[in-house]
Amino acid sequence: MIHFGRISEQKFLTNYWQKKPLLIKQALPDFISPISPDELAGLSLEEDFESRLITGSIDDEQWTLTNGPFLENDFAKLPENNWTLLVQGVDRFISEVYYLIDHFNFIPRWRFDDVMISYAAKGGSVGPHFDYYDVFLLQGSGRRCWELSSQFCTLDNYLKDTPLRIMDQFIPEQIFEVEPGDILYIPPKIAHHGVSLDDQCTTLSFGYRSYSVAEMFDDSDLEDATNYYQDPTWTNQDTPALITNSAIKKANEIAPINAINFAKFVTKLDTLDQQILQNIQFNDQDECFNANLNYELYPVCKIAYLFEDQQLLVFINGEMFNHQVEQTKDLITFCNTRKLLNNQTTFTKTLFELGFIQPMSAL
Image (cartoon, rainbow, N blue to C red; front, top):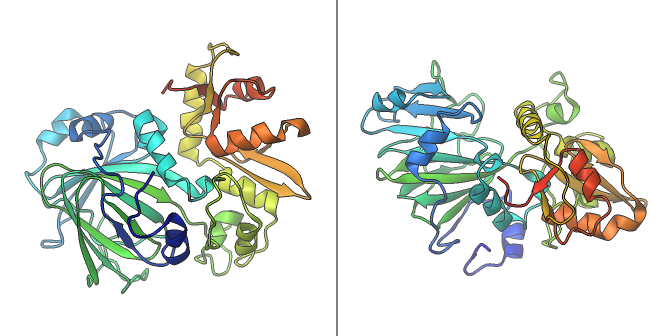
């Protein structure tokens, strides 16, 4: 569990989530990154991983962006300093990274996107920028300096003729130096600029995406399409898969949407994740169900549930999952833990046949 120091998880949810940044020193004491810089570079050579190489600094504003997969020789051509490697969705494939997400389950899991891991040589950065994500930045190794600002976070404040969205005007308001085990929380529309202070800097980014009106209704022509969903004040009840009535109410503040369609939207896989799941299912198609094993949801899968007219409705990967009423308690436990232990549930085989679960620790 994350050590919040002087505040509780509930105080964080009430006073900081989607409101203001917070540095949590030694949130995970004695933390050792599950991925070394060399291992991260190895992942970027594989087609399964979405990766990018960025060179440049705010001193010269000579930025370059190259998309992977890469070749080993690509790294030999890099300068000694001022470059960054980023690899998306590492949690989809690396179990040690996937299980780290459980530390953040006081935030609804259906709000979670993925874990991106970066390595930066000394001086490495992606430039000052802002986005519409909530993010927990866990320092894995080495040291990094973060500069934060709430100023000039507008869509017209970007450098022109640059392959990255880097802010033109950026005035730091807060400066933090982080080391392994520290976590920096940054809410949406807070500009941040992280610069590596040494050649061992790895950072794990746990991202929670925001939902725009245009995304929710798949219509870019909607008026005020940049209006984004805002969370209610969460209450930590150890039910990370639950979509509360308060969340549905907040969604309806930006556009009318019923609970079922909202649940389908927030659990729908994007194109890349759909492809990842299809590849996994294809590779596992010859596996047989074993009632003696414990199972867990594939990391790439999304799951949530809600209650409508006192009826439990479960959603997996954008679709409603049909179940029997007498399975309610076990199904809620599965939704919240993503695990099926001491396999006694009658729906386990159904989930297996649908390609949603795998034997535990099979990543």
